[in-house]
Image (cartoon, rainbow, N blue to C red; front, side, top):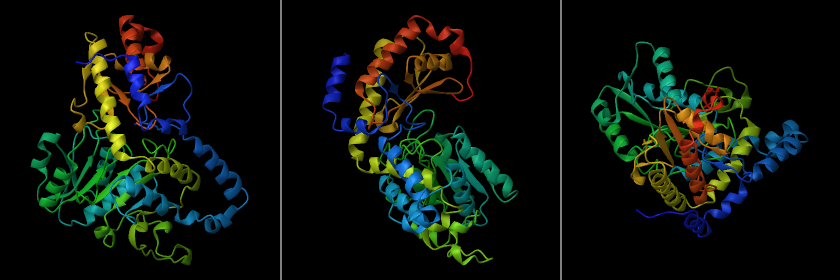
Length: 413
């Protein structure tokens, strides 16, 4: 095993083709931020864009800006940019609502596209909002569909001719494990079911090829690797072959074929616009646009290559410096099976993470015992890994995690 040093990692930073992107983000001196898989860092240009929208477009243009600044087409314009990051075509992605709302819209529509089938398939331990939304849909369509879950090693077995829809998260939020998107989509189609992927932990972090694998639907959020800000709107993908048939239940006026006709009767718009519901959040979508532009200007192959290397180095450093402290690797060791994060398990995981945060090293904790470290290649440095592991070693050696202030649970972990 190679003996890594801070100097050797600093040399990797010097040679890193992605290193200049770090200057586009607000990062205070001394901060090690490894939580971009939960909330991305503020792009510097977003501050200027926010001021421009507030002061000029809203402040001076007022309602005229729906036309003069083309607010009306924001959802499709930003959606088309996201499409380039997830292997979709123009006109297949729209920005709207939240991931949860978009999941409800698409799952509801998908079930109705497979009448007579009574089953939605997912896995236990999927991201909670996905399971909650599917449970809510099960109640909403009481007696018509049921949610069935199985561990991933049994998923292909339970996807059968009674399955209307399979809903899975491409990168698991706790373990970081990647699903084989092509294989699971093919299995769903083999029995005539539809496939919906949650891309919240993969869009902007790992290559996604929705059309290559013939995915039917997808959802994702804008505030993680796309750096759209807290509560940024989500996005949804509908393959063009399904758009004419799509009937989502939240038939709001922005999804109408002619919203300003003010008709009493709903008529769905053509294409991806029928995935819309209410009025666009112009401020939030305009800020998201900045983060998406940065991502779209980077080379995804370079991002993925650095992501793998960051994860591998972190695992190696933990094993070199933290052996004997009770950490267990939760994420796959093979970088090809892992998203852009590494998770460790420890019975004192919450307190250890609080001790790290007190040192200005920010990851996050997921119950019951998971420490998550997300690597955003556009601004994560190789030396950040060294500084993290040295701090982690000191915290464990000195039992710093056992301080009372680090044992107190916070509302957000």
